[in-house]
Amino acid sequence: MQVVRSQQPVPAELKGSVIAIGNFDGVHLGHQAVIRKEEGLARSLGAPFAAMLFEPHPRQHFQPDRPFFRLTSLAYKLELLAELGLDMAVVVDFDAALASLTARDFVQQLLVDWLAVRHVVVGYDFNFGRGRLGTPEVLRALGQDLGFGVTVVEAAVADGMKHSSSRVRELLEAGDAEGAAAVLGRFFQVEGVVIGGAKIGTGIGFPTANLALEPGMALKHGIYAARVHVDGQTHDAAAYLGKRPTIDNGKPVLEVFLLDFDGDLYGKSIRVEFVAHLREDRAFPGLAELSRQIAEDVAQSRRVLQSQRKALADSGRT
Image (cartoon, rainbow, N blue to C red; front, side):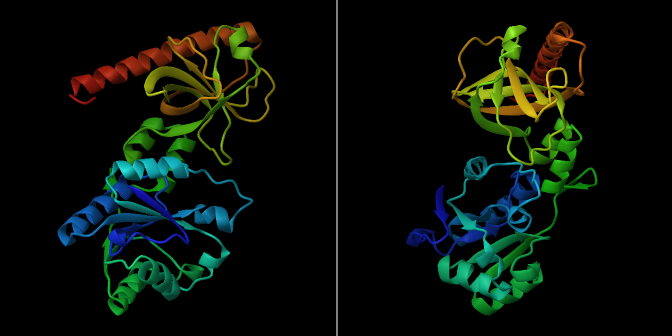
């Protein structure tokens, strides 16, 4: 998949694409439904297959002082989109100049003059242009005027719930890792470089890999059964997200203990996959009590992860 950023020329062979437009935060099953619809159109037309996304997320532009819970970094989002088979991802800088464009200017300058699109696919709730006045109906009218087709995809729904990034955030804020996975199509993950910590875990027999948290991270605090992906391998783990009330009740931290692992992770990039919320965060009388509880948490994480693997094996999935 080729990535094209704002102001960069589009390779001639990728012009005239069928393109899906959206923020794609999480690349959840609703987004995937849009992209599958688009892929079918692209194949039938013999056209390149692309997606347009915005960086930063528009909410971060319009409300820069308000923390925003991003489900995927740009790098991870592009990785997920590439796995869907796209030929091109167009990353548009969302800034004051873009926000000031009218709906018609947005379409003319980006879709027609820059990308020469052949067909556009958007979700039912897509808005664009100054004041968010551009709607799917406006886009259809502009497409008829400027020479490209438009397809609007309705919401993907399961168990009466729409698949949306907002729904995923709500589930994660409630600690429902399994519910969020049902919308995402995979378990929620965060990534980062392992940094040095206070060595408290090492001192009580549970050395942890520590990650800095992105601003706005709103996953419910507590202990999780987790998996850690590093150096092409996957390790079972117990993850702690919280303020360490037994220690200092400070800023939230993410600490991960890898089961049956002996190695140095400092400075390495890892990805933490949250599988199940096991318990709330709470304070303990001292480090001895905390250590005993962590041992129980690790044992429960092991049981949960082993049980999940068995269930997947029994169902014929990997």
